[in-house]
Length: 320
Image (cartoon, rainbow, N blue to C red; front, side):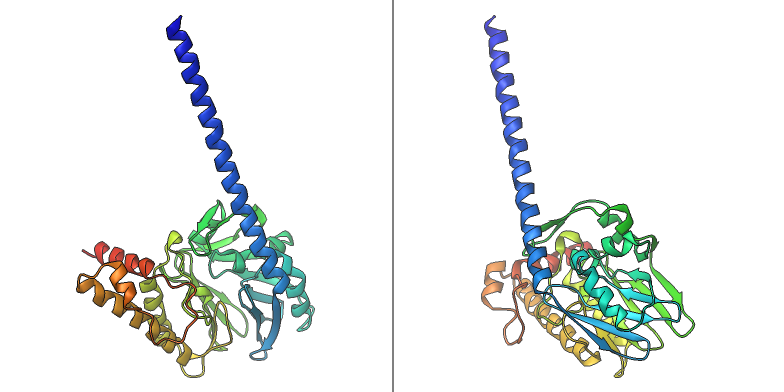
């Protein structure tokens, strides 16, 4: 009898512990959802989109703050747009498109999976507009994703209509009558879902968040991001471009090849300084004390020495 009583007490404790654990999980998820919604509402309320004409066929919607830039191509049949910001800003985007013409949107191209560039998929997808992206981007949108600190939010799974309808493993080309649009994957840079989009005839690129103008870039190391991948992709893009190339960054003003070079050089300098510390057997704390970002006139809200240290060490170890 005592044995049975002991078993019942033990079982109650296990059940109570399980309920407490589930309650904690639900509480933490609710807090994450609240954090995401607060961030979304704050960005949407403050968003200011401005339309900039680049050529007879290409335009950009430059966003500030907190929403991604959009590149627009107007063909004789309709619009092809790169990234689509937030679902709540769908009406704003459509009004800007109507200021160009009353043509329909034909395709949306996604540069990477983050919500500030793809949440608008929900608005465009509902209207049957086809979305094109890299294979792994679609996989990410199928389930919840934890975006790394300091952003540190859970991005929920997307509904079917907001998922890319057409995907590719390396690159894909759209052949318009007056333009050749190439979207090609960039390995492990801002994330593991990144692509550059080239409008060949107009000599325009959209880089997504692999290249930004707000300062040191946010690198989502929870989702395959690596500073060395960003530098490698910048080297490639610099080779592809010329002094007349127009660059639409993920965030910030319209840019050019010189801006790419400055950005790449700054990132390479930071990596070199941390690498020197590693070669001299300094600890992370000792490297941080040397201030690897010194002398670089950047907003450094996303710079964390330990994160870059781990990226360098991880990449070096994988090559051994």
